[in-house]
Every structure is written in structure tokens, then in C-alpha cells.
Length: 554
Image (tube, rainbow, N blue to C red; front, side, top):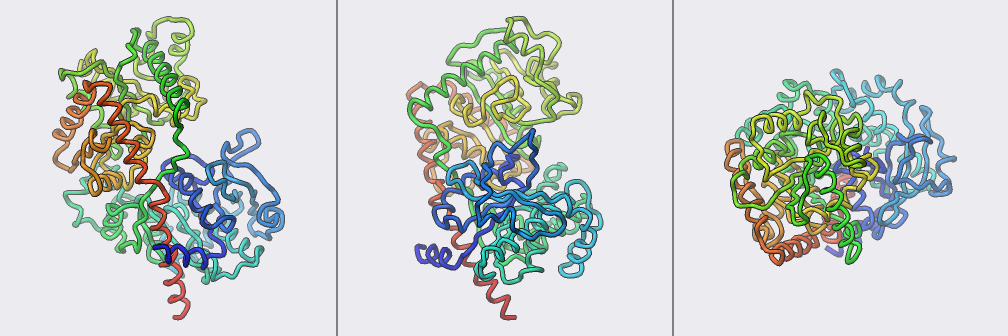
């Protein structure tokens, strides 16, 4: 593998990677890129440049971007760009501090119809039924491709030494556009989840029992996903190297996009994000205190320091992320021999404001009366939010008893939410156990983050991370800090029962047994360090270069 690494490094004069989530923390792709950056920076130095959307203003600047106008030979002021595109150069404030270009792309919108026509003519991309965020993603992607080509010319890099990496369907139009204007560049396209696979699951259809019967094009028409699916599928076929983040997703691509990825690139983690020693202990103590303070104010009772705190988090996809299964496992937890358990749902929703009653209760010790006793923030759509509706039903029907209590924190934990005011990574050490019972999860960063912070986790075999655990470790909390629960389209009830049993068993273990499980969790996470997983990208760069060369000979 060392030869592959040396060859990939020597052949790349400029490595460009773009995503909507560069310096823009929205979801899991941000974690992929920000944790991968240091290892790439060590390999390629300032040959590496990330490209993201400049969606920031003077009043709301990016907290992750440090502007440096002289970077890349002062390209921000010297690039000759069309369509009113502008760039800002700087460093991403993460381990490795890689170079970043943030792009203003508003001027591209008025040219999209012509671009869509050209993409249909050259590649057969059907943008006719586009709606929602399709135009925004395409405008940014096209601008990214234009900037990539202009930067290469500005730095006088041989186009054959340029490698351009595009993430998810939101940048797929950029891959096609770059191939049109600079065919000598090698291109990679990574799908972190197929748009049609996610849509099948999000619409409540059984993905697994009928998996081999699904046709991606047919389902795109049925689910009104033609534009995104067409764009994603075309980019997968046109890329010099197509990659997916897990074997699960690779099989999904093969079935729904009619192409098998050339390389599987599993997601690693950056250990520098994890505090150590006294800092970790302090965070655990302070964050637990904060959680129990919020719970006391919401519920009107006190909690012992040894209260079991279990949590789930991630994207607000009620079925896909297993939020439904988590809640129903809590119902099955009733009556089992457990300690007092506080269950947290740390999932961003359509937040209106912090709960004023909760703020008052925390400041003045008064009781929360007119707000739901499980909500830390009020929502704009409380009557329709899936988690809120389910919790109202469970509480109204007495399904959750006093030994199990739930708190829904429906906001991004960025440290400035008005209630918790603790960042997600700072809260993780406070937890005793996490549950990520996903139905659809191409990789699964949340359980990996959990064990990286020494918090044992229960996850599902419908995640790439869960499959990695099953392939490499003994499947139990005591053995590796992870328990992988099987999920299918027909075992929902038994999966909920298994999760409840795992929580119950763990809750009554001795402090010494819990401490050992935490140590095992952290040790397992060390095996997913990017320094081990980055070799898959070396393979991908090599494949992209080889297939680009073959393409140019035709």
C-alpha cells in the first residue's frame, strides 16, 4: 500500500475537494471532511484545497473560516471569473488547517437553464422536473468547477496533475461541468447516500425485503425525484472514480444507480477532537450537571448523580435514523430492573425559540406548566413534528412511567442555543450510553463519534459502521463498547425489545464494568482513525488517474 500512497502523492499537483458542507456545518459530510482534513494535509500539504459555499455575511460570519487573502498566490483577487463569481481564500479552523476557497455563486442562477440544456445534450441529465434545492446545489457546483479550472491556470498546474473530488449529488453538476471545460483533470465522485435510496426509506417503503426488485429510474419517477436521481446517476457513471462510504451503499448504488463504485472509502475519525485526562473529566462532570439541571426544571423533580443518561442524535429523519425505534424501545424498557433513566433526543427540528417557561424555571425555580415537559425549545410545527407527536401520545396514554423520562432537545448543539449552551462534542462525555437504531444509514458517524468519546453505543446492522463492527469485533458492549442490533422490514418489535434489554443490562452494571466498557469503546474507535482508512482514498486517486488516462486516449 505504501507504493500506492507514494504514487498518488507524486501524481497529484493540485487536489481539490468540494462539498456544500465545507466550512458549513449541516450534517455528517461536514464530519467526514473536517476529520479527514489533517491526514490529507499531511500527505499533500498546500497542494490540497477545499471549496465550499460562501453563504455567510458580516453579521453571521462562518465560525470555521479564517480569511487569508494572500493564500494561493492571492487568487481571491486575481482569478478572472465569469458570472459574477467571487471567492475568499483562507484556512479551515480544524485540525490540519487546510486551505479553503469560499465561493459566492449567485450570478450563476440566471445561466442555469442554458447549462441544464448543455448537460442534457452532453450527458443526458434530465433537469426538467427540478425543484427545491436542486438549483442552489447546481449553481454552487458549476461555480466550483469554474473556480477549480481557473485556480489550476492561475497556479500554472498541469491539468493532468489536477484531481477534483465532488461529494454528494449537490456537487455532481460541477463534476460534469469540469469534465466539459477541462477534460484532462481526474475526477472523483462520492455518494454518502443515494438520493433515491434515502427517498424510498423516507417515504416509508420497505427497502430491504424488496431490495433486488427496485429500479432506480422507476422509483425516481414515482417519488418525483427525477432531476436529482438523473444528476447523481450520471455523475457516478461519468466520474473517473466513483466511490461510496460503505459496502451497504455500494450495493445500493449497484441496484439503484446501475453502477458498482470502483472503491469503497469508509469514514474515519480525527482523535484530536476528543479531549483527554482532566479536561475530559471536567467536561463529563459539568455537562452531566447541566443536563440534570435542565431535567429538574422541566420535570419538577431532582435527579441523583448516578441517573443513567442515554441519548440519540443526528439528522431529523424519524424513520431513517431510528427515532421511532428508540422511542418504542423506551416503552419496552418499562418494568425492567433498571435505574432511573433519562433519555435525550438531540435532534435538530424547526426551532422557534428557547422555551421561556424553561428559562424562567431554571432561573427562578418555578414549575413549567404550560409547555410540554419534554421540550427544551418551542417549535414552529409542534402539532406536526414526528417526535413531539409521538411523545405527546406516549405521555398522554401513560406509556412512559416515572422510571423512564424523555427530553427532546430540538436544536443544533453549537453552544449558543439559549438553553443547553453546551456544544455537542462537549456534551458527549456526559452520556452513559447512546442508541442509533437507524433503518437507513450509509455509514453512521454518530455511533463512531460516541465511542471515540468513550461512550458505549447500540447501533444497527443497517449502517456501514455497524457492518464494520460485525466484521472486525465481538458484538457486545462489554467486548468492544458497541452492540449491533439486527434490523429488517419485519423485525421492528423484536429489535425494540433487544435495544431495551441492552439498555436495562447496562444500566445495572457496576461502575467498574461501565468504566471497562467505556475503555473498550475508545479502543475500538482508535481502529477507525483516518490514518488507517485514508488508504482507501489512495486507491481512489490511483483509479481516477488511471481511468482518466484511458479516457483521454480514446
